[in-house]
Length: 168
Image (cartoon, rainbow, N blue to C red; front, side, top):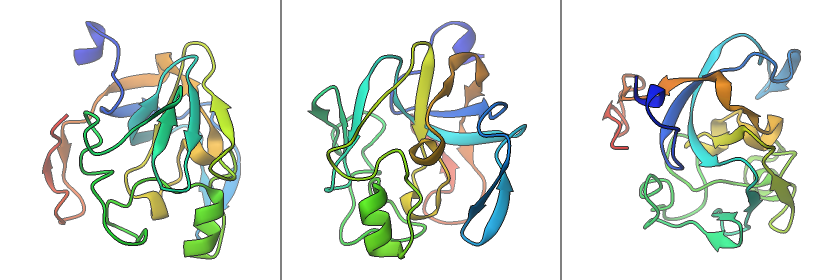
């Protein structure tokens, strides 16, 4: 219901329909994934017309402003320590860092910390919080805002420190 009265805001975790996002099989972590005709839950990181970079420090830069653990909705995402790891908040890795830490690339649209992506008009860009195990906008780009279904409110799986109400 929330988005019937206002648009989603950066930092919110949203549910969206993936229709039209590379409707073909992709290989990810050794598995073939059909990215079309399902629903995903991801964090909204950039809005229509914004210029996005994914720095080598694992922080997003939106229109020249670096997001950090004081940015609403990103407190846990950027409150990380140590190298990026699977299933923990580790910031967001670009392709250079993915290859360095995971031995494989999965962020083709963000090859390094200097590359810039511009979100198309009336589109959104979303990233998963589990940066080392998330097929997200780093690989398939932005999507039309009319594909947003709603706001995610509760994490029910897996039973980790992420379980429970979603704060924002």
